[in-house]
Image 1: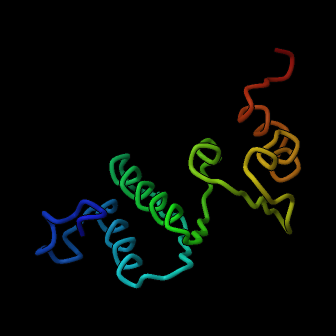
Image 2 (image 1 turned 180 degrees about the vertical axis):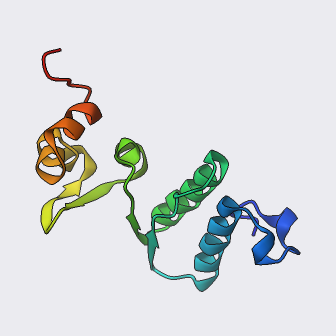
Length: 127
């Protein structure tokens, strides 16, 4: 509970927690299990920035401790800041590897659309 900054809520029922607090409880549950591989499906959906920051701090700590963390995430604006490696899929694998080499305008265009790719990379047509 300390690692996810929820000690003040330890006596509350799970139904009394906010969405962000609930997600941090799920992360705390993974901490207790001491797994070497952790898989999280959209852990940042519907939560506040404080909870997102708390969860990212825990994930970075796990990474630094040698654990493997797999996160399904759709906020493409945060990919480079949050993750080391990236797998882009759309009806199959488009690209995978280090974020620095995989998170490219070409790969985003292939996976999604030229318009989204242009917005993500601030390259509006005709500008």
